[in-house]
Picture 1: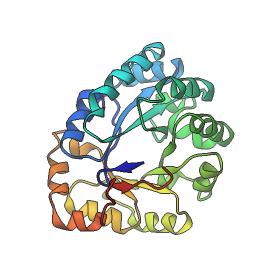
Picture 2: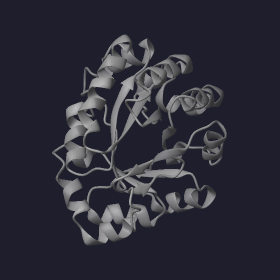
Picture 3: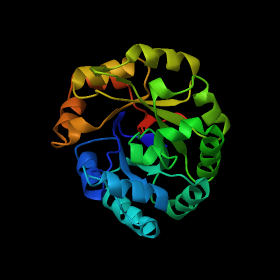
Length: 263
């Protein structure tokens, strides 16, 4: 599987629906991410409470397959790879949704990243890192249906987690490299993680412009992802993809595009 470039739009709950992802893909993003969506009732109820103070998706789980299919169809003609970010508590329900969305998305991203109290209290998001058996069961089940990556905060991650994800069938990790209290990514941490694994790494946090995109790739990310810098529109995508240094940092594509490790 190939991407047309190494710039991804990351999931932002309440924002990353079909029209949003389509606009990012039309601006040139090689990978777009739908979600995060809530697979089961515990995560949906948590999202409803979170939605009292910020934008959220609170779609009933039984409506998700048709909505995801509709959103994905809005993006498909752009040629961008489509990732589906999912919050969950129950690996079985997760696997069923993956089965229902086979063929309309390209990858599934398991959310072990969100840390709103409402999600942590039901065992979702970052709480999954404290329940490794359930997390790795989810990776095994999901990867039986779709290529699977794990979204996680790098500073919260056990150093051995990437290997466990790979052994469970996953193909990669999407790392939030936030430095608490600072508007920058921890590129030294990314370099250390890169030195320990050759699996797919998507680098996230503080990718806002041409320089930060290049820095993320040069520090070892296979793909650099953007999130909040896109809330005002897809302009940053166009600027990055039109910049000579950014094009050089991505290297030369094959005739089919840029190969994504593990796909």
